[in-house]
Length: 434
Image 1 (tube, rainbow, N blue to C red):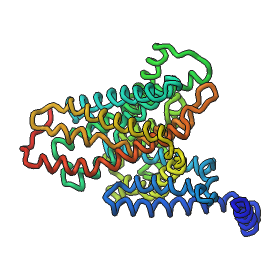
Image 2 (image 1 turned 60 degrees about the vertical axis):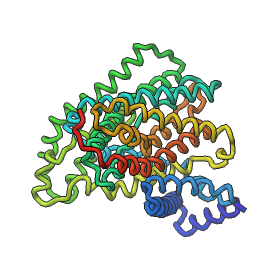
Image 3 (image 1 turned 120 degrees about the horizontal axis):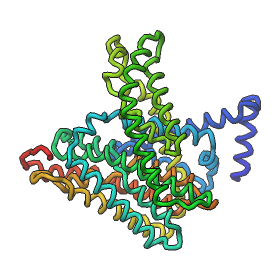
Image 4 (image 1 turned 135 degrees about the vertical axis):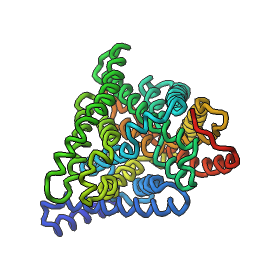
């Protein structure tokens, strides 16, 4: 039946498009299905008080598992090269937008408290994730264990920021600590990802990576981030100043994308993930850099980027959901692994609350605010799907499904838990973090 449907669809598409345009028509149908599923899932999630990204992910899970009920027409979406390329562009845009929400000055202002929270919030989950992998997957290599640790390090700035904003707590001492630490978490997480990815790629070629080589990867990632930021702060105002002399529509957006894609390419060229460059580009750009565009009445950069993100970012999240194998959820070992990984994710971020200096700070709220992995955890998991060690995939369907469960649970649990915790501490007198 499935074969007949597939054949009929292929013949109909080819006939209606003249044959040569059949691949394009197939992509158009796939995008229509993906975007429709993303928006329906996002709406349902929002109505349930959850982030829209969670609905997009779960919509992808349902779409990708229609084969379990005999409907297989969407199976080809998972491995389609064009859709995967669009999804990767969506990740670049997403990290660019996340970077734009913060500035270098914001990072310099967060203080010692946020730095301590961030460091503890990276080191502890990494160690716990590695430990869970070593405990439950002893037959797998240390590279798998290290990668699992890396997936637990970052925090979703967007999800926590949304909850804090909805509660009117965006300017509270706890919020400043959480958001500052989450930004640093992302930077440290990207560095860890670069190191783990470099070690795995070296192992895949049969090379032994010494501590010195690993140190070189850390240095390269740090040098790129700090070098790109320092150089970008000098070049960016001049670049946008020159661009402001150009006439025509879309100059600001095009210039920003050139800047983003250029840094993403440089990151990839030196062996880092392209998302590192996209994030750095967002951190560098500030409103003052493109003030000339604003003064002549053009829309802000974040507003201009929004339609592109609305198109590309859901493609990434739906595809990530489609690659989850629901049949794996029927296995007790996968569910047990997911449960322990989620527990490590929660405990690891609660440990970071120990760095919340200041007697009046609500440490429980700080720890809860750092829990959601959201889009960053999915990006890490997706990168893992593309890594191999001596020809063998690093992440199989069971591990990937367990990571996605962890992301879903931490994302769903954070909004109600943070609401409860902040309401509990409403009567505490505010105090600025140290």
